[in-house]
Length: 195
Ligand code: GTP
Ligand code: MG
Image (cartoon, rainbow, N blue to C red; front, side):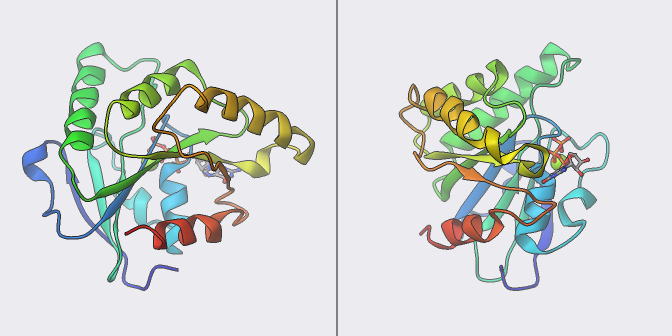
């Protein structure tokens, strides 16, 4: 558990708005609705911490959360909106690129993938972008409670195959359910082990 208090610090729309890089940070990326905010809430044991900052119109912001004596937890805007206008997607990609390149304290990018869907074409674009940055990314499968245990093997196989093409990928894939608390302790331990 991250020692309390965990607080929403700020939402950032440009590199100039980033908080000082005075501690390490990890970020959470993934398709819209994949469960990023829920995962941050589960990790921090706070029910509505991340969602509280997710007011409409702020969805393009990079949201920073502070933990006591721990890393920043960073909630990235969801990608893969079918209806997102091209300029919005472009702006998001530019900000993400700048963030990945310009944040020396960023230790890991957790890429969330819905357990029901596996790695999709829209995820591949982000994985390729991450390959071109200097940061290791690690896949976190979400909503494990929505699939049967018998489907785990095929899911891990599909994701492993997709990751084989990506040099920046961490080989360990973490299965989680924010609803059922699956994998949360594992993920906390991974984050706590980064320095
Ligand atoms: P955006 O901020 O729009 O990009 O979405 P997000 O990735 O932050 O997703 P969010 O955490 O808001 O969750 C989206 C929906 O999935 C919500 O209805 C959640 O309740 C649900 N959800 C998230 N995690 C889980 C989970 O582990 N199990 C189940 N069954 N539902 C989940
Ligand atoms: Mg969210």
